Length: 122
Image (cartoon, rainbow, N blue to C red; front, side, top):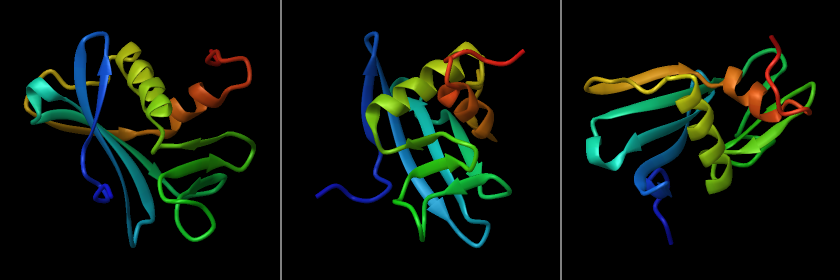
């Protein structure tokens, strides 16, 4: 059985990424952390905070699930979902170029991935 929060591997175009999902309290937030294996100390943490119209995993949902009240639901434990977040974060140039973990709001990426037409507003 896999340990909770243990990094998992995802290979994309020959590059190996480590990723993990977690949920913390009292803030009630869920996060997805993505790191390239060759630079383990550099990465991106997408943070999903509960709030009006925003739901994170916990009491009413499974661990790692995030949803919007007006539509859209994603399970951050699914490698295909993680790949979509990785692609969207790369397209937005969100990964840091230097040592450290960059933390950013994951909801804008969620919105882009769950939009019915698959395109961003703008």
